[in-house]
Figure 1 (tube, rainbow, N blue to C red):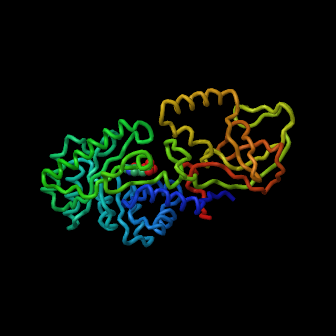
Figure 2: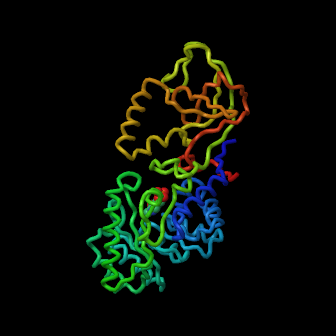
Figure 3: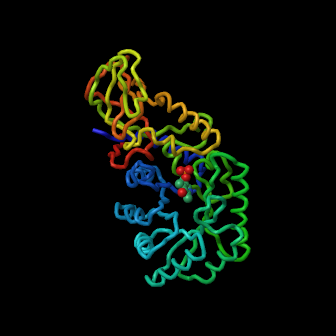
Length: 366
Ligand SMILES: *Cc1c(COP(=O)(O)O)cnc(C)c1O
């Protein structure tokens, strides 16, 4: 049986570290993408148990799921603008906080709120470099008009999302300044920006949060930050996949393994066949984790090497690492267990980020 194991003690350790770092400022627990693969509701429960009472999601429907599961008092910020009446209905039904990233967003939200005879709470999003949603800092006057004229919208926050906080802090700090300047200009024109928030996980550990009112954290809970920190700031990677070895067999000299015959046995080798492949998320993180040029180069070299030799992936059996031979298949991989005593039915542990572990695999908190 395949399962994805979430280690509760490590998760708690990471939450503790995040809380210390936030130094009493409110934390939005970001639980988008099914709680980064840890399970929307399961992760939300652990965060709530640890005193986190604000959540941030991407989909309005996630806000509904949270309320239905008994998250009644928590604030839920939906971090993308609404596009449809269904979105607005979900936000109204869930008493969630909407995001407004343009004047058009505000017009739509305001019109639909009026239709529902409701006042909708919203945070204003500023685009400081991400290029997704948000007013550019020069549009402050446009934002002020929402405060003044759209009485169906109650603005309680202002935020931005940094695109380089794992890398250039020079760029990021400049973005912070231009963002905070928007808050200042709003105050000068008599509009209260409300809760001003910007920090994501990388910024929380690398930047200065003292001039903002809250932080939004996701990946730090997983212990998997896109930036390198000394000793990983004490954060511990949470989660691994587990499944059973199906077959143990000997391959003779000259036999090959996997698509493309990337591996040929140079001598007799004992292998374990494990029903876990790229459709389960094994080995796919690499392709998506490309952030810095250095990494890009590293991945490129790795990929070029990968054309000639097996990737250096491993699975762990009885606490010992077994190198994966040849290319990983869709639902299978083959590992060298020449030096490991094992048999069919034994447990194989596979390193995979919960974000990439196939969502059909059950998450088990231990
Ligand atoms: C994902 C996300 C975050 C959290 O980022 P982490 O680096 O995972 O902490 C914060 N804000 C927004 C808008 C996001 O999309």
